[in-house]
Image (cartoon, rainbow, N blue to C red; front, side, top):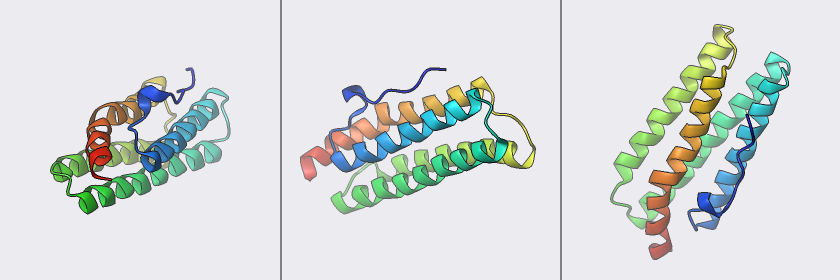
Length: 133
């Protein structure tokens, strides 16, 4: 699997959110390399945990901005965040507790999870925040 590359297509035009997204893309790429290189399970587990933890932090960051600036789609966006985290944590639980490997399909799921959210919901949020900030 090839690396995700940060480019202007993924930019929501809000510097602090773009910075978070760049970090998430970097962590995703680290995870992909760790799996492809058959790194130690504990290392893969650590990278996956960091990706999820950073994502949770990032989602709270976005939610704080949505509340501060009165984003009308707050609850819908927040629910999407919760669904994404629950899906990622289920994948993590299967990896850690059940000893399953991360498959290409699960890596692809994470990629679509990350890019899909940025390209849809976060783009809408970015347009809103650019008008308000």
